Length: 355
Image 1 (cartoon, one colour):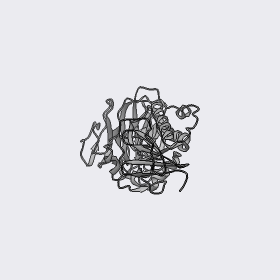
Image 2 (cartoon, rainbow, N blue to C red):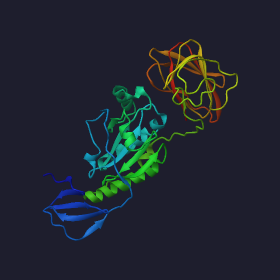
Image 3 (cartoon, rainbow, N blue to C red):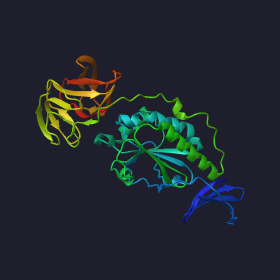
């Protein structure tokens, strides 16, 4: 037997810590200090008691990106778990990655385990190789699990990217945060749960010399425009075509663009997830309120686009792999008109997001 082992007997979690002693996590948030032989004195000590629902296990994973197969259950009683729902082409998720990496680096050795549940927003994000490339690009080394069929997503009743759940050492979900932000609050909860873990396991808590998030460069988000989709399933902001309809549409953009309204020009094939130009000299026009514009797009063959902001040339880019492209960066926060000129057929446009 090792100096420290954790297992369960019925509803009781048993932690053997050597020296003939064991901690028994009892119902009601109590810890009994017992002899390993099974003799338990009457005294118990309170541990942090939080309200929360029992965790839900990873369901029918489609693959494991950078780890051997894992379950949440194998770490209950051993780790504090941060469960992160993400998808790699989501700018809101990408902006949280530096914070996740900072927490992983600072608290991994103190008992924090981050598990990413990669649930794809678009079909191209189901490819494990592209997910691996993305995780390497962003320096993510904590375990990432593919959830291509939304099985774990649905088990948690989730509807958002990103979303973070904290699971304490007892296996209860005790913290839930939707979207970006609240990084100091999340880290404070991580610390509290790690302190509880140390108390339960009879370990010394590491010394904290400031918040990990303080070392992360903050990104100012000034976007007021909504995420805007091109595919028929969600193209509610399409201004000059038939919303919710698949098939070919020949469209002309108006002289004046309305705020937060998507306009296409040229011949476009509308699918459930994306719109693809099938002719030359196609355009996209959108009036937005933000400082940055991101574009989820791809193409089977390289397609060159030119980007204009308020009628002025901004940049030229080549679209090829399905990923998130930055079209506008660092514009003055406020209203602007975006024009994307597409110089050859085959661009698959999925979504605009803003920062």
